[in-house]
Amino acid sequence: MTIRAQALLFDNDGTLVSSLESVRRCWTRWAREYGLTEAEFGRVELHGRTAAEIVADLLPAEAVPGAVARIELLEVEDVSGGGVRLLPGTREFLDSLPADRWAVVTSATQRLAEARLDAVGIRPKALITADDVSRGKPDPEPYLLAARRLGVDPARCVVFEDAPAGLRAGRAAGMATVALATTHPAHELVADLVVKDLSALSALVTDGGVEISVRG
Image 1: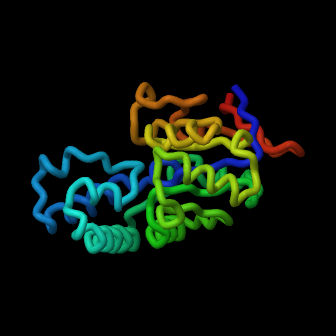
Image 2: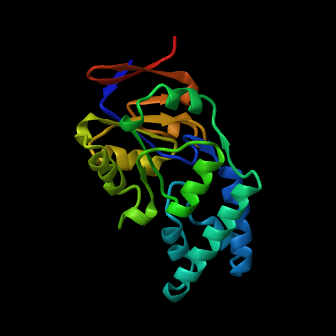
């Protein structure tokens, strides 16, 4: 199968980098600090959502701003302790793309996203974060904004995601989707193409854009 696109839009955590252990470590500490029980904390989905949305599910509205600032600090500090690493195939795949043909679209804040990307040496020309949108994934707003930043019709974009919420956002934006089974089983991922990670894919740059295909 080959997917043709003019722009490639990548989620970050679980797609380009592995930060799952860092996320669990920081949010577990955060939950203890705010006196949340394991049952209370366990009922919310962490992956693929903004910190503000997660905190709003757990705490009173007046406590949200301070609690969001606290989890951001914990996660940024964890990065400096080696809390993230590149997933297989990330470096090679991104290096094969023109810099103006791809963007990172993440539910993390600008500060946290830049910290994680800097830690692994990824510096996208276009970065969309939770600070840039009013509605996070699964709303299509983040991906539609990325398409506008790159000057590409959403229908000519392809989204790379590991989380169901992100894949729903991509589909709602009218974009092709590629799912990476790095954090969820393949059978839970609905996409035009499902692969284990970026090492399974190759990209061929042409005059008309980029052709993405599964390695033989």
